[in-house]
Image (cartoon, helix red, strand yellow):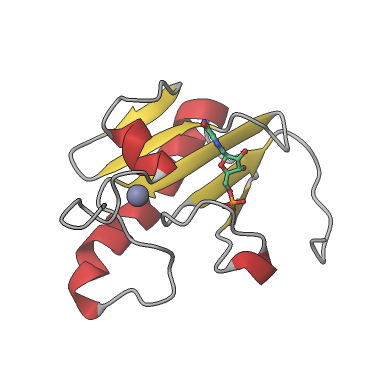
Length: 121
Ligand code: 5GP
Ligand code: ZN
């Protein structure tokens, strides 16, 4: 029945990109979107995604190198915007269910505002 529909039609984060689900945006440009996590695990918890649907970092290809690089560079931009200069933060991406991934659209968790422990749980 769903044949012919785009694969990401019902992807939660694609729906956020399309504005079908509201989000509290922190940063947006033509390639990426950063928004506050609905269930924050730290005083500051932002989700950073490419607008283009990729399931996770696993399987990312060479052709995505510029996009992935620009996401990396958005991280210090978000840090400065939310925390000012010389801030401390953690960035995590869960790849696969066993690693804690629940939304299968590539995303990075940006966490700050408390002390983090290592190893993570
Ligand atoms: P994962 O478990 O896949 O690494 O992370 C998914 C994240 O998306 C979780 O931290 C979860 O709280 C967040 N999330 C799930 N649904 C929504 C939503 O509708 N809006 C927002 N802003 N975040 C969501
Ligand atoms: Zn998606």
